[in-house]
Amino acid sequence: MKLGEREGSELALGLVGKFWKPVIEYRAVAADDFADFAEPGFAKTIYAFRLQPSGDGRTLLTAVMRTATTDEHARRWFRRYWTFGVGSGAHVLVNGLLDTVRESAESAGVG
Image 1: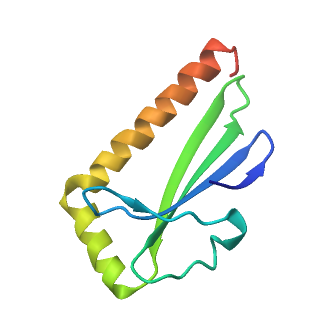
Image 2: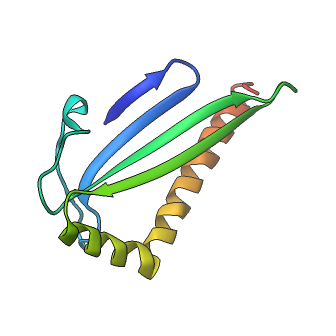
């Protein structure tokens, strides 16, 4: 879900789920309720993307992924999930997304 946007420069997306399960159990949460969501057993992840002009006609795209859990049990499960290699898979997915955005911007003539 879209959590917020600064038109033309920043975008924040959020996702709530039990990412460590073989079939991820997602929870539908409204953007306005995301920050306060505290149902035990879940993790909340934010993907934040930012465009920053570099002054030479190019644009730097950065992405930050942050995750918080709603309780100690979820924290332990998420830590195992992230530590034992699945976290690196998330990096591969985010890097793929960034490559797609870059290629799209370049084909559209955006710096």
